[in-house]
Amino acid sequence: MRSFILAVSLIAIAAPASAQAPNRGNADLQTNCAGDALAFCAGIDPNSPQMDACFKKNMSRMSPECRRAIDAYEKGGGK
Image (cartoon, rainbow, N blue to C red; front, side, top):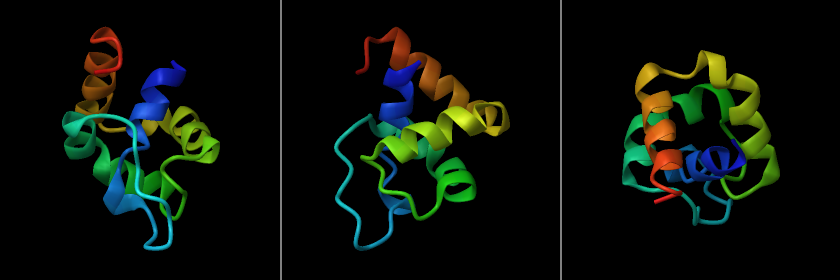
């Protein structure tokens, strides 16, 4: 479960301008989870444990598209 949370935190557009550029995840996660990251985790550094915790806490509220992208990422071994 932690690997998908780490991956989802790649959402660059959800990060404040001062935050470090994200270095985790893939394009599908960016595309399908950007809105969820903005809605539930705005202002959190995408590379931080706080982003991981935010996604874990809000997983049941994430869009179906985001959850599918997370599942695919995990099944692909984090790629």
